[in-house]
Image 1 (tube, rainbow, N blue to C red):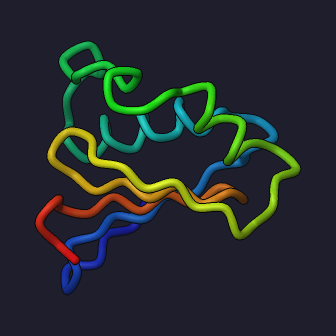
Image 2 (cartoon, helix red, strand yellow):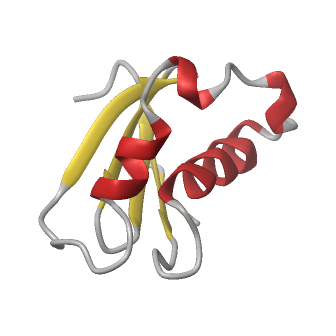
Length: 91
């Protein structure tokens, strides 16, 4: 995971053939917040995890993007295994 101090964004990558996008999002937010995932609002309360995994899963179009708010952050998941996590108030 990398951090851009100018934008306040974290960027992470994952292998969609080996890891579901939902798990990658939970792992990324856990690392950023330095909290156990059990302390987070469950991801399924803000987005359909099956839909996220289908859209951003293996062998999907690299142009697909899913964006949503979670844990006071703006999460952007791109098919192909890219996640951006930014403060919710950033553009």
